[in-house]
Image 1 (cartoon, rainbow, N blue to C red):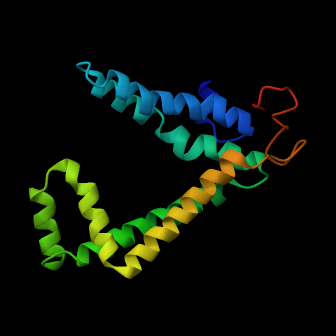
Image 2 (cartoon, rainbow, N blue to C red):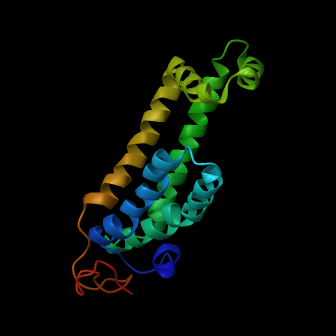
Amino acid sequence: MFDFLFNPSGRISRKGYWIGFLLPYLALTELAPRLLGGVPGMGVVFGLIALFYLWPSVIAVPFKRMHDLGKSGWLYLGAMIVALVLIVAAVVMGAGQADGGFEGFAAQMESMPEDEVGMFMFELVMKSPAAMVMGAMASIIYFGFVIYLLFFPGQSGPNQYGNDPLVGGRGFAD
């Protein structure tokens, strides 16, 4: 299990991705906090769980899934970096649209309640057509890769990244 979550080499099938990673990840990071969020001290536990899953969800498991598709994991990482840069650029452009420019943006952010920050940033990005295009491009890149990882079948038989994970019937190889 540790090797599955933390080692980016090898391959996993769609089945392995869904059952071995995605469903437990969603249960631990989305469902459990909603059910147990009111229990004292659980915020720290859920923070540690999220930190534990950071490397597997961003690097190791998507790399293995890309390997099963016959592609390098670096393609995925490069696309995610491009998407992140586009999001940052969109937010910076949006911040320039705030009342008073960047100084006004900083002042508004300091005085704003934490739960309103996301909507404020979204509204600023929506004021700039260039920022909207960048945000849309980042979304297309990100969700395109999510769909690719979740729904496209892997290569049959062994490839340069390892053995076919479906041969043993488990969805995991190497």
